[in-house]
Image (cartoon, rainbow, N blue to C red; front, side):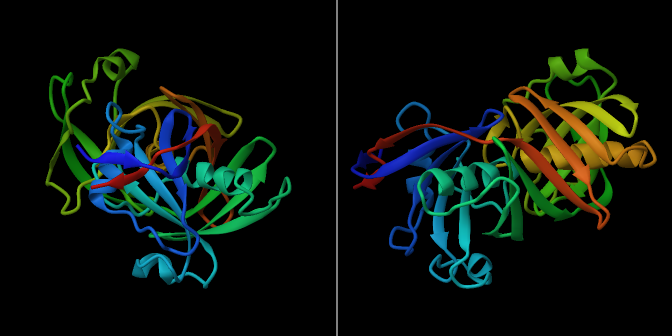
Amino acid sequence: MTALASGTFSKGHGTGNDFVLVADPDGAAPLTPERVRALADRRFGIGGDGVIRAVRAGATGDAALDAAPAGTWAMDYWNSDGSVSEMCGNGVRVFVRFLLESRLAQLADGEGIDIATRAGLKRVVRRGDRFSADLGPFELGGDRLVGAGGLQVDRPGLDVSTGNPHVVVALAGDDELDALQLHEAPSLDPAPPDGANVEFVVPGTIADGVGSIRMRVHERGSGETLSCGTGAVAAAMATRHWSGDAADRWIVDVPGGRLEVEVDERGHAWLTGPAELVFRGEGISPAR
């Protein structure tokens, strides 16, 4: 096992979706799969669903991130298994909280900041103690058959892209949702070439233009997590589609808390929820 040497880090989460965050403005300490796995290990490392490096665009060493205007803060996001990911809806909110509390950026209530991600620039707006992220337009795709532990038969799932790939499955009720065994990745037929996050949802009520759902998720590269921000958007937009676009605002209850998804007049999906830093520490840089 790789040892952890000196260095500073923060630990944060958005509705229980947790991350190790490190500041590297000048791009002097690139992440590697080995380093990410060591940091994210819940027994031998710090522990988290992912690792996020704060680095300026132009210094990241990643073409997708460096395509942003030079100097823009870039969210270099990695899954806990050491694979890179395009975006993270909870992560980008926690990332902005990290920038503010590390005094790397300033943001008054109601103001926004552009963050570079591998899925393009994302605008994040401060809303008091919460943050709203403009995840941009979403795209509905085709169907796949989805199998999972606890399901008696495979179910149809709808492809939804929110900057990264998702497959959303509707279930009949809370009993089915609670019985799922998501410690292993669900099966997808046909299998997406780059994998996908899989969301299982139970639609609730729609009243006064506001809908509600419950959701659990298995994230590619991380396993079952307490929450997935882009997954909440995908689940809400799939349910919106199935309901005939009956609502543009959705309340999404996940095991780690509650998120809100809203579609604006441009067809962009906004994700709103909490973002918290729970501690800071030292001892993160893997030493061979």
